[in-house]
Length: 237
Ligand code: ATP
Image (cartoon, rainbow, N blue to C red):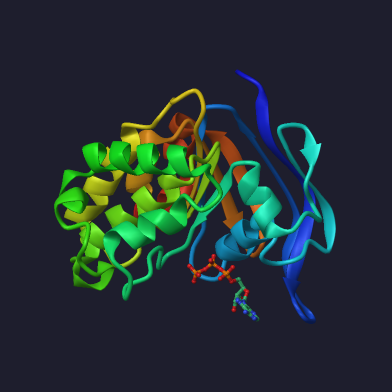
């Protein structure tokens, strides 16, 4: 495989007295798409927020492109190319274009304009409605705006928190299709926290998180054959 982009070792964090993550090990290579499967309350959001510095790491280390970033502030991580897409993803009261502008806030101005023009080519519906409030979009379109806003930042690593949340199966497929267009792009890696196995279609590797601990780590083929994963996520006996 190619160079290592993200190396998480022995990571622990939580809220106040509540420890959520226990010795998490996770590695991601350049251009790779990794799906982190976990049920409600498994600690997916906590892990992603700790990667971004939105929650402090208690123990362990996070390295990005070989640099220790465990205790860097969030904006410094974003400037290095790690971008977080939350379940909400967009500001509903702002226009579509203002949302994308926010996405580009750390890019030089001339590059920001170019980036947004390029995104309107990928997401033409957003271009046509650029002056409208994000809140006027349907759930599926809003999610597309969330993806576009995250991509506007020109991430090297896009960290997505349950992109399927609140979407019908049809829209989930649309989101997966859009992301498939970026799969194996050499300068973009995806870490997708999900319970929805549709995202395995675009994954290179799979981790499971259970009670704040990494369980399974392997290829998509191995995940599909794993009895515990089949029972927990595919609803199979
Ligand atoms: P979900 O899909 O339900 O969000 P998740 O896998 O993302 O699940 P987390 O949101 O990381 O899980 O939650 C892990 C644990 O941390 C849960 O027990 C949850 O109740 C707890 N938790 C989450 N946020 C907070 C918070 N702000 N303060 C205290 N405990 C929290």
